[in-house]
Length: 431
Image (cartoon, rainbow, N blue to C red):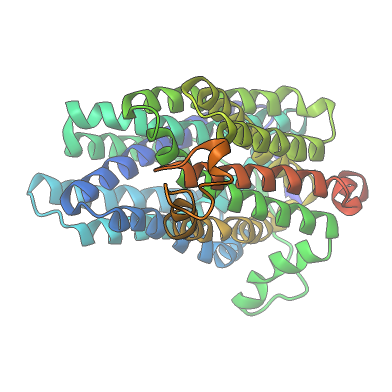
């Protein structure tokens, strides 16, 4: 069992601040490197591959990383990962300064950072359970959701910084944030715990799938993870469709303002998780916030406009923060501390593997099916087209409306799943 040494929130807040800055720096670099690749190649495909290379390695490696996190000191894992990511960015900075940066360097860099992230995320997530006293667990989980807000703000700051301090300056800022995160980890000590080996101990592969075994044996947790996988798939489609749909009726500058306001929705959702979730069943927060997000997406499809899009983005981001925060809080309370690395990593793999799939599906459906259907002479021009209009962007609007309907339907259907609805009652708290 764990041996807690942290008596208050001080250690967590120091670590959290360092990691928050590091996430912001990483978001800035990811944004400006993507812009650089697009400017150099003019290829949307190569631009999209940046996200694929940044996401897939970590998602696929999460189960193995979870095993290592449960075996090793979680603070040291975070230190090594921050160091590796920082050194990678220093190499990119060197290439930029000497004007030797090539597109393939970017792919290698984001892949390496994704590998480090596969260990960093489960280590950080599992360590938080040790760092936060139980009475502050809701507050701490809500604070962690601000990391999502930092990633949403990053493109806005990145656009400004790219014009002022150029690519090399942004990368330098990222290196500084990595250094700050490293120093905060050096200054603190994490509470120690004694790892308890599962019955499948031995081979690394066997321990890696223990996360799946743990979740599978607890049907409520399994239902929660599958719900999050479905939610992430639909969210991934919205993420791909939102920008081109918005640009069909507004300017890029206005879109930036809309997403800036939307990032405040993540802050609002994080605050709700911190203070409101203690008064309700957390599963209500997961399903209710997802239902509201689906309705907001549906409204934009029916009535596109700057005001409706701004409201929808704010509500969707708020719902995203609440859905993620409440689901993570359920896992943090119900999963034994000594195996949280493996369980969190495997649950993250199961829930996030649908996101890159959504990227490909949304692009194919929009370009090859829905846009042709809603063209001036398309098959649906004389039926659906009379309701929402025809021409460029209308097919994406129709697809967005379908995604919103599916999100609402999935949320309502999940309310009928008794094991999911009773997950907080059936499983005891492990803290």
